[in-house]
Length: 123
View (tube, rainbow, N blue to C red):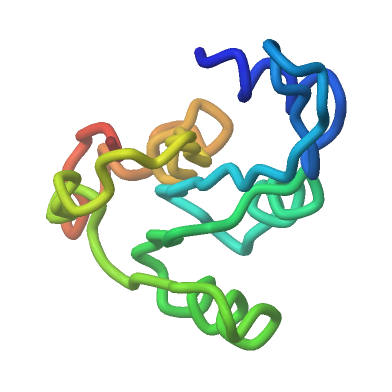
């Protein structure tokens, strides 16, 4: 992790203490979120100062909620397994709302019994 990122985390999202000069300067951390769901984690990251490059979610209803609440966010509806990660090189944070609900222990692995789902990880 770079000194600027560490300083931003210690001193707040909008400034970083330049280690050589001791002067605060503005920085912008970026994030890519997979399995974004309804956007709870994304809202927290936004409040922490992250600029979302994209949010990826397979569920249509979740994507509609995200688009309605944050029309300026880049919402990609699709399977994260088909995402071209090379397009997001240089992003500061890869965040994910994993495990996806059908595959979590809380849902008793209903995806294992579903004919339309395959029991594979989301990322």
